Length: 420
Image (cartoon, rainbow, N blue to C red; front, side):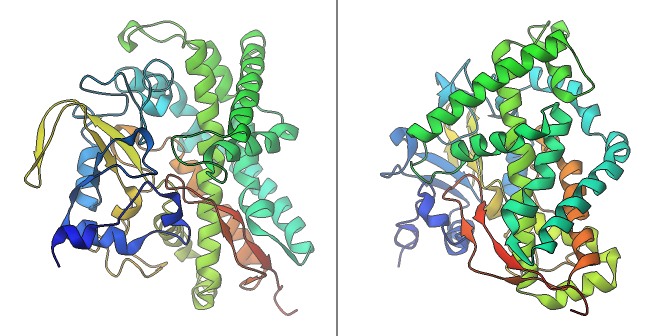
């Protein structure tokens, strides 16, 4: 069998390939045989255009730390760009959405918001988050069984991001529904939209316009007020206020990123522990293992499956030439299971050390909310370990349909309290 024969049929643009979880066999073949793989377009490939794939941990980390070479906005003679496989319009998403910007503008906007999620700031709100978490867990456990994704995993991140942004708590579930409609390809394929996703996008845009206007008129002590009233230095190119579109898209990004990835990590972590009750018992008896367990949950979940970049100049890698304007996709999920970086990577190991996972990215686009996510995951599991024996599944989990976000729609569980 030739290398091409062994790689034939791998289609990383097909959401159904990810229906049962990470496509480990496909990733392994790519890492071993084609660490820089030219992915020909298929029936499900947005734009009908091929792209390069990086799947080894070392290569993904290297490329992510080269923003001048691999742009988050665009490159070459492309009219669009961004971090999805499909081109997004320059000036609408690419170059405007915070995670689709390059320095210097990305750097200056990042400086605006970093204090809101700094370790010092998180320490000041930890007690409040712990109180919220206790209420969420007590309510779910009292029912005897629940949908862990909906009733537990989604709730704390959603309440936290609503508080940080300055969104009324009673509106938080609307935001979650809107984000779900645009992130889950349940009724359309990548690069396409549906009536539901278009309606959700329009409703969320309308909500953000009204909320941002309120923050300009009556600033409060929240992250969205900072964005709505910020004045960037000239070095940000240009200086002055963020554009209306930048502000709106920043809101959309934080609603999705602040709720979606963490809830899916919490759910993936719970599913892994339910299959390994001995690990649950180890965590109950020795809570010093929890920080390491959180890192392993982050690796195991790999909630952001990929991010795309665009080459800005010619570069040779693994004997092949990437040209300006070529799409280069960094498969974070594949990198997090690379045997070259992790011992026995298909084993969930709460004691894994070292654990150089890339679930928060690396380099200039390292996730702003990494410390908040770690805190939320820790609070949920610390609270559960205090309250219940290892839960048991009450039915099969249901995954989202996506090759971009590794997520869940439902995860039914049953609780039992110690001594019950």
